[in-house]
Length: 356
Image (cartoon, rainbow, N blue to C red; front, side, top):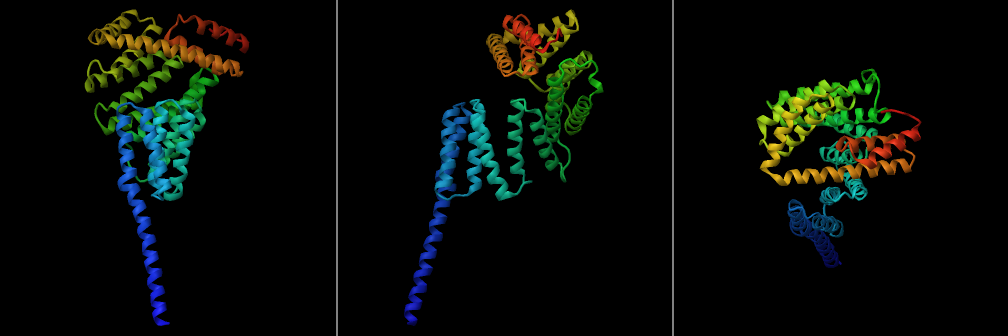
């Protein structure tokens, strides 16, 4: 009997050990072999701009983690990268579902305030911002900012979160009334301005000629421009260009974009001589790389069509303010785009207004 018990214990011990070893082998297979190889292949394809191929690798990696009983956090990482790839392909609905799946896993394993949870929330906020769901995006950015701010000093990451929150505030205000008579009477406008100035102060304190400071100044300039404070907007764009002149090549795409902003806001103020100065610099970039001018022209044309089409969609759904916004955005790029001019007239007629 004693022998039988010992034998049974040995059998149970052997079975348990086999089970543990099998689990560990499956985990090792996922983490150290199959999963990692798939992730590496996905990252390589992503770097090369082969987004469909990258997505397949990341999706297979996520399935490998689930099928082999691997670490759920590894699965969440795969889902995140798959979602990032979907964003590159502009498949945002699928990306949102993948981010949500990853968020569920990370929150259950790490808790609601872990840094990896904040990473997912920020990705979701970026998606909401892209879809102009400014209030939802603002709340997500605020949650990330509140969590990142605990026990840490302000840094460029903090500054960029403040910039995004400010963007949500003033864009929401712009959607409500694109031409307010007194924008400074709005709490959202003043809060956005305060946040952007705080973000700028953080960037300047963190590093001299901080490239992130130029991004904040771009946002500040855009806000002033949209609400008719053109002199302040021009000043912000000028400061951004000064930083970029110190830190970037003269033909860098960010310099090119900055010059386009200065040309636009100078034109709006009737500063023909100054506009000519900025345009001369822009022409120098195009002469050094002629393909850039053609590419920009094509991109502007495509963007104008895209904005006009979005305006038509809003109009068909009865969203008159949204339609007006998109038609105006299209006309900022190409003031002579006939379809946008006519569609804006129709939108204003529907709204019963005669704003010019």
